[in-house]
Length: 284
Image (cartoon, rainbow, N blue to C red; front, side, top):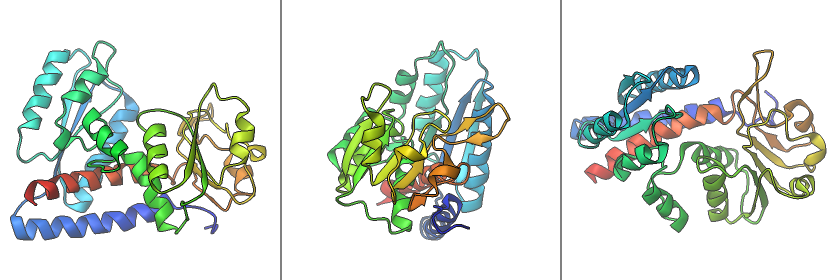
């Protein structure tokens, strides 16, 4: 593979092997294994694929997993009752509520009902606060995976100009905070940013998480930049594409992630990491 390509599958496999080893050591010493519960409401195809992949990944590293698939008609109170039970279930260390939820359910209320001690997505306001403070308990999985990839490839972050394209609570904001904590100078861009191309052109590191296929063009990227593509967009042809014009941008970047095979494999891996971390905290 091209030595410019950041191979998310390779990094993921490396981390999963460490998770597997730690999980076995804890099982041998304490007769406990990490437990992850996934809650899926409705029939969203992408969510079903993600949950299925999560189950297989748990099996591969020795983590116990269970799934709670609920019909679209499930009420908010019924969902809250389930989460309350999982919060009090000793064999469950992590709770994943798969988004999107049906329109009649308040996402924030549901996510905030998950115990901060089992919030392995890192979405709870308490855990967001810990992250902001620089003392993270659980780091959101995709941004965490980005940092792990940069570290794996020995890509220096300190003192670099980093531009995060996107300001979501799931990727953009936490990615910016993590880069800042690694001593990058960080700019967050979004749909209303003026002179966006000029801002991107100054970046040593670009994290593209805007949700628009092939948005980042070659002329927006300076020679030697590191480009992390978080986007997953399905084209009319049925193929997946990132937010970056990969074929063109890879000609001038020093490192770049492909789609698929870049950031994607890291998200579930860091979910497993957080679930293991939750168990470790409970027995320490």
